Length: 339
Length: 261
Ligand code: SF4
Image 1 (tube, each protein chain N blue to C red):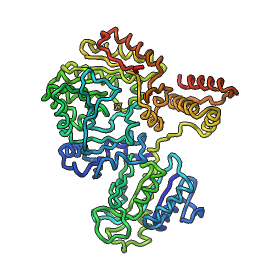
Image 2: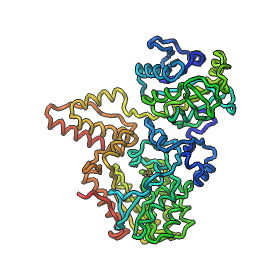
Image 3: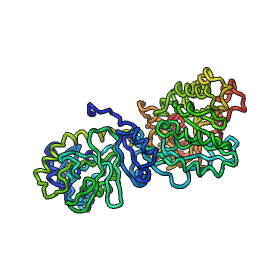
Image 4: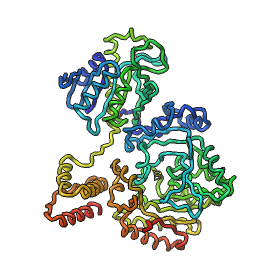
């Protein structure tokens, strides 16, 4: 039985853990105003909270806390083999946030981090400084790689800062991947040809089952339509595809739903990819025992778990056949294990 | 099981009264119990509390879903009202800091707490006690951070000599309802990670015994997949086990396909 006057769920970010060194940082102060009801706990270093042993990722997921910190060292990391640099040789991802507001069952962050809390590094100005020496050549930065930065845009304004920075640097390309429906940041900036907004879309049944706390498919599609109308470059990603018993109807239907209201000509690419994960992250995911996704009998090769080749090929062939009804093959990108 | 830990008999008495606990002499420490609750009087100071708690948790190892609450009185700066119950979100011990996870809504005032070595007449910035850091360290080997809570009732403004035994009892007694509420809150965030009943577990382990370690792991994964995907459906685990290795491998393959279909 619960206290009658209290909500059963704690409010989002009911606790702010703030490193002493950034108490005066403008972004810290802005966030404190926004979360004026939250408990503020002054810490020395984010790791003393984020890296504690004996945390429960599953329990924390429905009561996430926010940790504000200063990133020491590298903000930028080289692009990974699991993702696509779109032909741009210099490809980095920026890790200005650790953890995600959303809670997808298939997310590798559950295997990567000991905590479901979010760490926000407030000194984004240092990321821009670190990136500047590379900007003599075309450089792609994925700004939302280890998280969904758009999901917490109203709190951080980081997407806006990246868009402003890209507007001033002609060789900088951005990929902003999201499931969010909040596109306020886009409305306040002039569309930039070097910025690709990549929306991850899934059938509503998959969203309900595996993508907790994320916007519905319809909301994401409205955000996509609005972004296109505003003049932004958009890529759509049906990635990761989760193979289920009704895959045959769910995913082809998703492609139909998408293109029923979105002109295929107005998107850059469609990316298709089935679920994949490094073996070590999958092991951690299994320990959490949160979702069936972790326990499918995947094939493991070179430390990477994927659907067995027949399933993987079937997924891609089915979706490619459907997608080519709307888009030429060269505008469809697929992820498949190189055997 | 709910584990309640106090330092003093005076803090424990209102609790064993309220929860109708019986004295238990299984350990050389003051212990009161019933089927759902164990109350330990760990003594004053870090060393005593660490030894007593380790003895208790080693004797009865906590299970998934158990919780631990440290309840007691504390000295605090004058901005804290005498009699006020504080829920602790940060414990200092010298340079070290410990953080219980508070994952539930509640109406208590939250506070940091300094764990010190002797009673304090010196005014500090935060409330102080003498056991919390040791309790945290010992308990976090057995409990997840959200399964522990530290509740401190302000007894004095750094005038420990003013605190009487009766005073301590009254303070704790005045907060038994607060404790009831805290117990409910802690229990509400327990994540049940047991996917199988103990009967199912026995059968699964028996079945796995017929296979190699890696085959057993693959079967366990498939069973987890099935249960997480179909929480309402019952498992069919009774199978005739063939003698030949090849047939056993075939059976395993069939089982995995059926469970993950
Ligand atoms: S939105 Fe992306 S980063 Fe966030 S939980 Fe889902 S998969 Fe992980």
